[in-house]
Image (cartoon, rainbow, N blue to C red; front, side):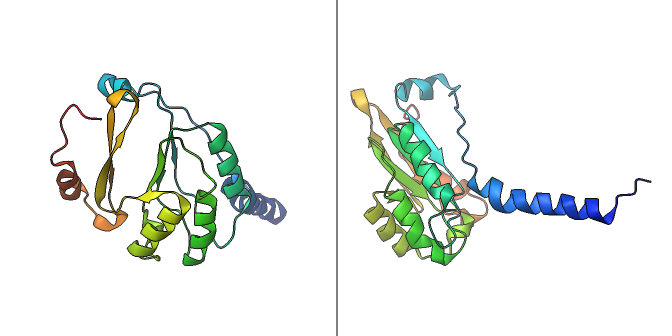
Length: 180
């Protein structure tokens, strides 16, 4: 049996809390991904896509949001895809949209809602996104014309569906099998 002193236990708890509050929420990680599907890789050749997720703006712009904008813009993306959990609570909506408005992408910025984003209505997301320079895809799709006549389809589903299979099938109707 290992006995830990109350002081050591308190120290470990304090360090975990410090990490959870001050380190991890301000940690922006860049991970490069190589597309291992030849058809998709061919369609997206030369296109730089940055995907952001889990911003979780609370009620003001923090170091995290500022660092995210700085790092993202330095990558000079053609397309930015924001895959949900923009906010943690409703009060984060306005600061998050202000943050999104500072992002730059040559072709465009698109977003979908995450499970944490449901405290704000669909219309507000659509309008706020538009004002911030982002197109929200809420149970809808769009096509993006890329250089050299290439086309990319973007599909956005609400996080609240449970099983997405029937919704995804509906959104994919009419898309050619060889489209990206």
